[in-house]
Length: 66
Image (tube, rainbow, N blue to C red):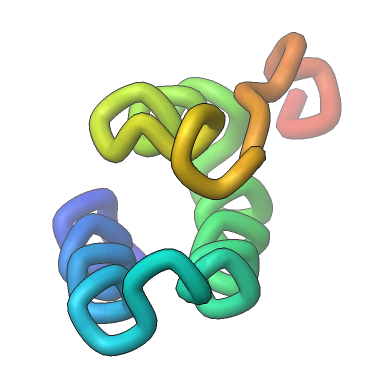
């Protein structure tokens, strides 16, 4: 998955499910974390304001992807 694909999938989830999109977004974010690490994960959290809207917090570090 690329960052652009992740953005598209998140936008689609928000459009389809609105305030109930968290489970679908969680799936995308798990894949992002696994494929691209904490930096990409945190970028998406910030870009979509996921912490405020869906209680998805940024990751602390990228140590798990080393």
